[in-house]
Image 1 (cartoon, one colour):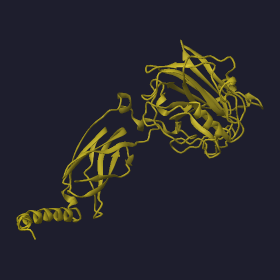
Image 2 (cartoon, helix red, strand yellow; image 1 turned 90 degrees about the vertical axis):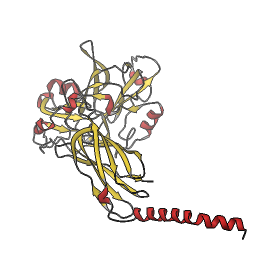
Image 3 (spheres, helix red, strand yellow; image 1 turned 180 degrees about the horizontal axis):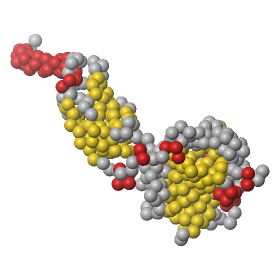
Image 4 (tube, rainbow, N blue to C red; image 1 turned 60 degrees about the vertical axis):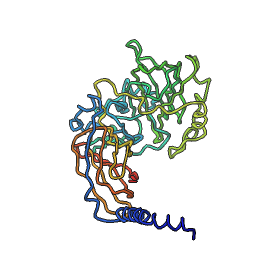
Length: 394
């Protein structure tokens, strides 16, 4: 062997040995049980909820008069979003044949119960669930039968653009089974923009004119919908942004307006069919929950605590910073699992109710891989746990 190479190997041997020793030690530590007890946490956060949301006492609602969306089963993510609904029963005064939602508005029996919706997105389906209040009462018709047909709902909300929507002219349509009509408040007058009334399968009812929407638009709206004698129903509000303002003397003369069928727009399990696929190609989309603001002085009590944006903000050889958000003020806590040893700990509970959560975790072991879940509680008995994310400490 070359003398110079041999000398270099001898001189470098201690350094190589030390490096290998450190690497082995690091690997050993990452696989060594019993080190999870050294983990500690520091919590911080802030409450980004609006005053109306933060001060609303959800325990004060009259549970016997509150129904959370029985049609789609979805709930709002914020108490200032959604639609307020009133249920109207068919009465004997309306006669043997009813084929207009206006008959319900004028002659129906308006119930005290209020229904809260996150959006107007009920694809064609059979409705057999009925309406159940928050205290477990099932609403019935005049004959004591579960309310699954022969009723109407008046939806009230404020239409607005979300942060991702572009300003401009919007064309709105209703896909409904049976009849539905839409009104907007302009200069203290409720003006009709869509008439899709009558007994029919899921039908596309289109507007008489477009509506201008900008970032400051807050347009009070109402939808009057009724379900006839059958059990199949649908009520979906869709819209598209168009190049310029337009009016239609006969709204059925464009797009798929006026087309109808039980399986034309949606199949029976709620999936989209050929009609809806075509509408999507034309630029139509379901109006999102973020586009509906609750009417003034009204909060949506049907809000489910949820976690979003859970992620590792930063990390080093022994610590990490994790962030997440909740839609309602809630506590902070973590579950941390060592991927190699299977050991798991739950960090101390931080009772401060915030919506923007930050946790600095110390005492982690270099070379380790952890699975971490965020836990939040709204202080009223509702707890939610996030999906697990991977935390690698290098």
